[in-house]
Image 1 (spheres, one colour):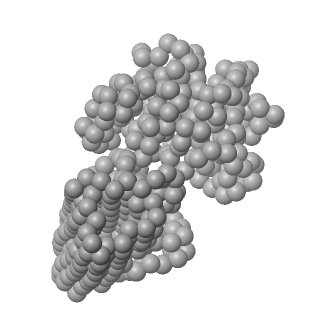
Image 2: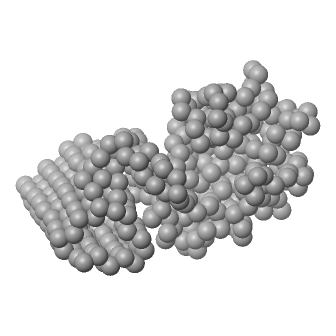
Amino acid sequence: MKAVILAAGEGLRCKPLTLTRSKVMLFAANKPILEHVINALVQCGITDIIMVVGYKKERIMDYFQDGVEWGVNIIYVEQKGQLGTAHAIKQTSTYLDDEFIVLNGDNIVESGTISDILENRSGDATILTVTREQTRGYGVVVHDDHHVLRIVEKPVEDLSHNVNTGIYIFKPDIFEFIKATSVSDTGEYAITDTLQDMIDAGKNISFVHSESTWIDAVHSWDLLRSNAYLLERCEKSVMDGTIEEGAVVKGNVIIGTNTIIRSGSYVIGPVVIGKNCEIGPNAVILPSTTIGNNSTVESSVQIKNSIIMNDVRIGPFSYISNSIIGANNTIGSHFITQTGENILIELIGILHWAEKLGTVIGDGNDIQHRVLTEPGKMISTGCSISSGVIISKDLPRDSIVI
């Protein structure tokens, strides 16, 4: 069976991190979300992948290339306009002449999630669902036994707690129904509309309910939950780096090649630290933290429950918690992120709720000494921030703060 991975979207609600990369390339446990999806497919024996790319496609293609490093064969097709999931799947039609599975590249799944639908599929098409108490923002499946009656996008009433994961198994005849799908009120061609047309035409659309892993990182801060979950699943410690005398490393900790943990540092897992990093001396790295490749954490820094991406330098005596710091950032000494709970954050003119968050920082910023970020405030890309500044509002791209 071949897999179609939808990886063309931008991820507007994950800005500023998606200003420089697509959502599928956001990191959790030191790997892009998309890499976790590919690994899960491989574990299920699926190695032929058709990847639908669009926004920032070069970054995806440069990273995965032909897929040989992951034991897969990847063919790329481009969705030139963001015209919906049905339109994206339509781009793959010339490569598919048998049953195939469709997945989103921006959801955390494991092999058990995929095997659930593979082993229990039936009918003319199959939808994988999970239970969610809160269904706001999701599509839900209204069903009778194992037959789907309706798919309702973002229902305003409590119709069902069976959430559509966006994982499907289709037969090639889906493309004929896609051709007949009408454009939605949002100007897109949605695969859920295609499925509803099939139901109305008397086709048997089944669903498989899964209790396995499916995590949807809707907002940038949802990555912290994905990261913590994946780190907890790490089976063993890997110490490819150097731990100096006087440093303490406990719990499941992965330390990459050529990384040095300096004397007096304290690392308690689950933690992943990438390749070519320098930590400490006297640094404290606490659980649910990922530090990317080629990064430096200087003396007396404390980091907990955070994602630090590649090529970041954090100055001494800094404190970072519940935060995401993008790539290629230079941060001076005494940098502090304040954490808040139940924060309302405005994105694209809409208020969104963050249960717990420090800050989110995009790529390529220069932050000087003694800078403090208030809870939930975001720094975009290419900003220059002088010493002694309190970040009390979101900073747009290329801001200069003095």
